[in-house]
Image (cartoon, rainbow, N blue to C red; front, side):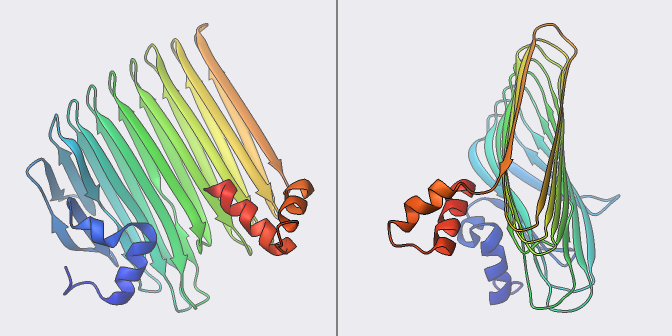
Length: 309
């Protein structure tokens, strides 16, 4: 691995994952549109697709507590990278998958990564999926990330998804789709921070098709300067099920945050809730921290860190 990855690459990888932990499990590292390093294990196989860019990841049934890392980094200005990654999780497996993309753009052309990830969980399978997006660089070329995640959960399976976009991404449209069978569970937690003139849009589309299926979607975001954010949540209760969608946002300066909830109960026993709260930081919180010796700016920073923690 050391021959293909320089120190700047390591620094970028550490923003989206723990570089040292990558080597402990199965992994596939993609840089500037090409796979550069890969490792498989006895229970996890990674195969390059033949018909399109991307990989297929196969996890054997009953695999317990193994890691899969599939980070992407882009350091080439002007590059548009499109990748399709499909995960096949065997019956009763329990694994952690860490993905995400880091873009460093030091020049004038836009750099873009579109990642389409599809998860197929067999009965009783469990997945924790962690996805981080990050951008940096001194150039005025944009850093653009448009992830699509599709989740198909069979009976009794569950997936927990944590996504974060905290710094440096100029434009992002994140789409998450899910279809849940009987007793399946899908829990999503996202954190987004935008500033300047950055743009972020999140779209959730979840179908609760099986009896006693459930989903809990939580979005926490901070918008500063003239940035704009859109949160769209569509959940369909097609059976006896439970759904909870929650959007909390802090706005500053002349930023804009729009939350559009849509919950549809197609079954009399569908129990569905949506909550949304958007506003500025409460003055009482700032005053309390200022009594501890913090400036107003420091107080705001501490409140935002706690909010996105």
